[in-house]
Length: 350
View 1 (cartoon, one colour):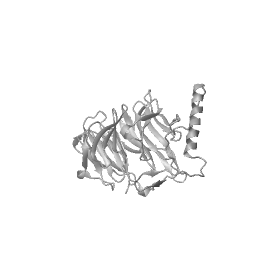
View 2: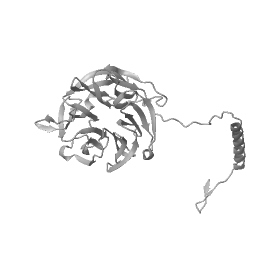
View 3: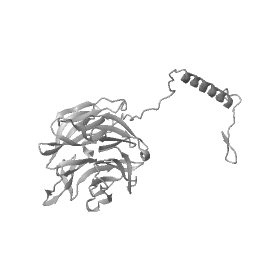
View 4: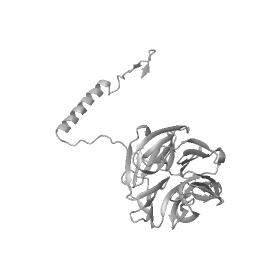
């Protein structure tokens, strides 16, 4: 192709080319004629190509986190029945703590007279918290707690139970009707409905581009890439009540669930062949308690929170074996609390 001075395109054929435009047109007509003939005769016609199913790119190299570089788990607690409880002589509805994975120190950060529901760490931006009243930035991009300098992004419009961030879209939230946009990608208030899919328990991003969700009744799916007109793909019905889930690169998806007999399970689903009815394994079958949260620290391990005999605990579920370069099952106690653990997030050491 060449371009003339009037910015119009001229197509110049090559006389030595066996497939001129006329030849291609004649061949297309022949192909169409044969296709129509096959269709009229009732002959099955196989499509020349199939639309590829979405895939998760495999992660072959996992950067392990050394013990000296471990950050903190930030977690929020509420009273199980959402009544007030006492912290340092004050009656509050929620409290947020910082557990240092290296020093094992557990520090009270803040209390509030509103219910804390979700936490989300965004690399390069900070840690965001959603309560019944507001969405607030409580850590800066360096991983430092802001305390009184915490910045309110917006008032809460729904009870947000899970948050995620997509670079092309912004901060997203799951609530009892579906998934909504909370801010744009520079964290300015911008409310809009992404998808009404019913009561969503949690949302997670993979590869900073794909958004997955799980509904409380057990349906696990993906929202399509174009969030402006989001479609959905149902991947699996887990046939259990689902409280939370995580994706671990190189390992797959983990789901915290409760069955119809009120036994809890941690389910594992590999992310290969994800859209071809993937099998589900019972990683921890039928344990007593109610798992509420699950948290992956990539290159280190996986933690989950559960209720056991009116006591609330955080335990380590998986540990990353650096030598074997794989995640291994490890059931290790970490923290106990008198209150229900309703949100957990990892803040790296920067």
